[in-house]
Structures are given as C-alpha cells and as structure tokens.
Length: 405
Ligand code: ADP
Ligand code: MG
Image (tube, rainbow, N blue to C red):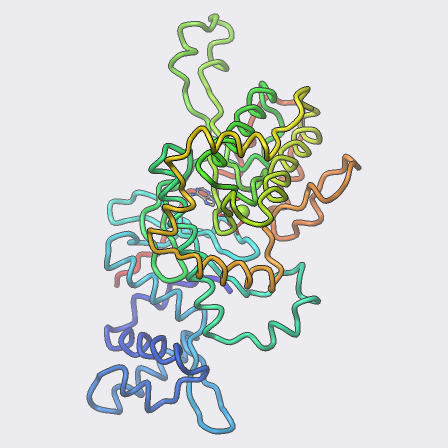
C-alpha cells in the first residue's frame, strides 16, 4: 500500500462528502450499504452520489463488496489516506506530497511540504498491514480482521505517537516537532539526519553511548520507557557546536565544530514505568544500545547498567512530572493504550528492533529487518564520516505533487 496522491486534485467536494459518508458508515458496518452511503452523504439527487461512488471506486478509495445479504462498499487504506490528506491540506499542514523516505512494517514515511515550501514528514500508520515477519503466525487472525479494527487501531497509534511526541518535546527532549495529527497520520518536522544504523564511525563512541543511556534514564525519570530504543529510531543530527569553535586548533577546527546530536523518533510502543513488564522493556532498550555499540563501534562500557532500579530512583527524585500520566489526561486514555497494546501484540508488532535477541554472535543484524534500507549494510567502516548519499531522498522539488489543481 503506497500513498498515491495523484487523484487528489481531481476529486470534487462532493466526492469527499461521499468518501466521508463511507468512513462514517464503516463505524457500524463492515460493508456500508449503498443506500446508507447516499443517506449519510447528505447530497440530494441520487445520480450525482452514484457518480461519486463510481469515481471513488475507480480510484480505489472505496471497494465494492458483494455480500450475501446486500451489496455495499468498504473504505480502503487509500480512501482513509485521502481523507486525512484533505484535512491536513485544509488546515495548512500539507500543500504538496513528495518522496516516500521510509517504509516500516507498520508505517509509511513521506516527505511533504506546506504552502511556503517548508518540508515536513508525514507518517501514515498502517497497523494490521501484513508484516513480513509475522505472516504465518497471524494469518488466521488477519483473515478475520475487519475494516473497523485497522482504521481504529492505526488511528490509536497515531494519536499515541502524537501525544507522546508533544509531551516529550514540551519537556525538552530531542524529538521532532509534532505539527498535526489526523486519523491515522501525523505531520512532524523533518529531521535532516541519518538513523544511527547508517553511521559507520563516530569520533567518540563513549560520549554518544553515555548520552543515549542518559536519555533512557531521563525518559524514565519522567515515567516513560521508549520500548523500541534502537539504532533505527535514533537519528543522528550534525549540529555546529559554538563552544568547540574557540578551543579547536586550526588544523582540527573543521571536525571539532560539528556536534552529533541524537534525536529520538517512533513512539507508538512507549510504556509507563508502571507497566507490568516495565523492567523487561527498560532492559531491552539498554541492551539494544549496548549490543549495537559493541558490534558497530567495538565499544563496551566499563560501567554496568543502567538498571531499572536506577530508573526507579530517578523517578523518586522527580515525582512531580509524570508524562505517562500527562498523556493519559490529554486524551489518550488508559483504555486506548490497553486496546492498542493488545492489538499490536496480536499482530506481532514488537518494535523494529531485534538485535538484542540475537545473542553474542557479533554478526550484523541485517537479515531480520527485511523492510529496512539494504544500503545501510554497505557502509564501509574506516572513514570518519556520515554517509550522505541517503540525503538525496529528502529533496523533493522536482517530484513534489501539489494537491491543488
Ligand atoms: P516505523 O514505526 O515504521 O519504524 P519510524 O517513525 O521509525 O517508523 O520511521 C521510519 C524511518 O523514517 C526512520 O528510521 C527515519 O529514517 C525516517 N523518519 C521518520 N521520521 C522522520 C523525521 N521526522 N525526519 C526524518 N526522517 C524520519
Ligand atoms: Mg522505527
């Protein structure tokens, strides 16, 4: 399932009303009966509505379902995408759609721009899209999934991610700026950086390692465990370091003025430190970083831990600010969190990290991440550089599709 925005500009406001009607109808109907679509659209003159219906079906935004009892339509992922895009466009969040820069198991990541050309990221949650890894185990379950559940669950994932991103950002964590959320999508600022996964060498692994462990502990201090804290979900941004400039010798100046700043992304699986499995998630996050640093940078810290008990102590020192509680109060309820967690477990989503489970073989963990960019495996070590080739994917001027006519 790929976002194809081309038909967007040819759809009329009536088409969108009918599309919204199918969406509304699918809250209570697996297959929305045609007369109900007509009724919910609120449009007079039956033939006009039927023209819209066939137009939407032609563009795969709704799909005809012949049922034993009646004929009707269901909303497709494409249809839901268009509804969300239309809302983002109306609100000014998105004006044009550019390249897809990432395909995760349960999301698509697309560069978009607003009307002034400022680039952003659109993340489309696609929970329930059959994941490569879990096809077998979940086949039976997925056969019975219905439109309502994937739409609802993908929306929950987007709501959760947006709520956490906002809470983290408001409290000074290095995360993208959350801009808007609608249905199963979020718009956030684009981070011009590479995942840690694609970085072959860093000047000082110990410093970065310490920073990441500090981030894990700081999250816990605010009541949170990321739950998928790994080299795919940490983007390494190059920033000029004003402090280093004066100190650097002339020769080394150019390399010293750059500071590597880790930015954390991907929050649908965050859990509270009060979660029953909190300690397991905490240890897993810590071990992912340890394993990655050992394999990629041949760095092993002399200090043991950090341990969950350290995190708990940190929480006691900082009892006033609980972001897990704050997020709950902001509208992403505990009930929603439970529903989402149960669904993610059922379809086999457990983050995109699996390095920690592979034991001590020291082998790169490329094969278990089929959906990640293969080119990341080709980075040669030895140069003190960040591979910049991937950046070309971020430039969208030529291919950007304006959503307007
Ligand atoms: P998933 O849940 O599918 O793992 P992520 O949120 O981790 O999705 O995003 C997948 C990839 O997309 C990331 O590894 C990163 O390369 C890219 N990406 C995601 N968000 C941003 C962003 N705000 N800026 C730049 N790149 C991003
Ligand atoms: Mg990710």
